[in-house]
Structure formats: structure tokens, C-alpha cells
Length: 154
Image (tube, rainbow, N blue to C red; front, side):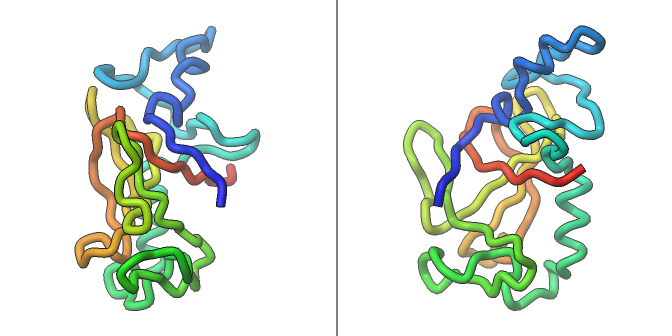
């Protein structure tokens, strides 16, 4: 398993957005900006960070509210019998997050969206081992926390 934790500003590549000659944006913690529909961020060419609507569409497509098999979670790695069926192929691993220290590794997976919710907050997809987000949920979070990213093909 390899991966990184990103602040929201790093995930959206706020430096590239600030240096955009046609539409410079000052984004990140404590700032509100108007982002394009598709934000490449740290994703490779031809891919982008999912926005809020794309997370909702994915959860709806997998029938997240009625899904009993935890279709987004990997088949191993989750603590407390929290493994999923991974029948969706999403294979979410419980990387936890970074907030001054590594937290909830084994219990939680969090993925940034490109949506700028408010100056200090944005949305993320969460999977965890409790009843609230075991099958997936979208909630707002402080932009300075370090989370994972998943990219969507354009």
C-alpha cells in the first residue's frame, strides 16, 4: 500500500491555481475561491478530483443507503471486523488521516472533494467502522487536515 495525506490546498494544487494566468485563484485554508467544474489538483493528466456531486453520484450508484456488503471497502485491512466486500472495485483502505499525528489508521478512510464549501471547510467522502459512515457518507471538514485523494477519469 502506498499513498499520501494531503491538505485540501495541496490536493487541489493551490499553487497551480494561483499561477493560472487566465483565472488566478487564491485557495486554501481561510480562503474561499471559485473553482472550475473539474479540478486536476494532484491527479495525473486526464484525471481530476471528484466534486461533491460526483461523490453523491457514486454513492447513489452503489446503493449506499441499502448496501449491506460495504461495497466500497477493501476486503482486508479494516479493524473490528470492518472489512467490506469490495464488489464495487473501489477498494478503500483504512488509511485514517493526519492532524498533527496519524489518527484512525485501520478504522477510517477519507477522500477530499474539490468542492470549496466555506473558507475553512470543504467536503470529503468518509468510510469508517461505525454505523454512521460504514457504507459511506459525505461531510464537511477542516481544510488543514491531511486526507487521501481518489481521482476520476475525465
